[in-house]
Length: 214
Image 1 (tube, rainbow, N blue to C red):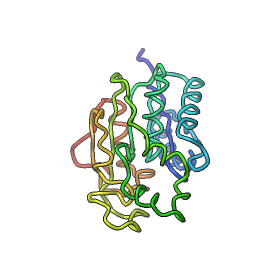
Image 2 (cartoon, rainbow, N blue to C red):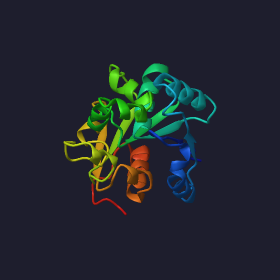
Image 3 (cartoon, one colour):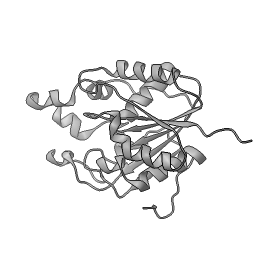
């Protein structure tokens, strides 16, 4: 009898809650997959607090376990892996995560009246030295290239981008595979093609670089 497939833990981004993964999780249930969602205070909390909370939740879940982080959630995942190195984590997928910085966020932080809208977690990620993730974690990155989103209020955002994060900013150097889909930053939360690519990487360690499925 084959071993059960690892469950999947989702981590949300800025201004959000774990409930944003409801559609992805419903589709996973229809596929016979079990998933969970981790929520943290992305505005009032800290990067260390979010990473510590994620590590604590992992200790209470069955392992092995896959991790999927959207936007800032992917940065929280990277920080947690570097600081806690929990056992039983298999593969990781980052969805539109500003792993190498955020041009729109850096510009917004220069405007006193707007900087508070970014909370504390994202600025702490942007200000710190990049964490070193142990090499035994296979990381896949999904980026979007449809430039529609709040990032358009910031002039000069390099292309291609998903309306919030540039494709270049998602290219984590430790990633095993990287794929760019015709979606916006928010569409990564409900795009069926995005979920299928994430599952493909979690199951095989690589994305399907053929024609994206819809």
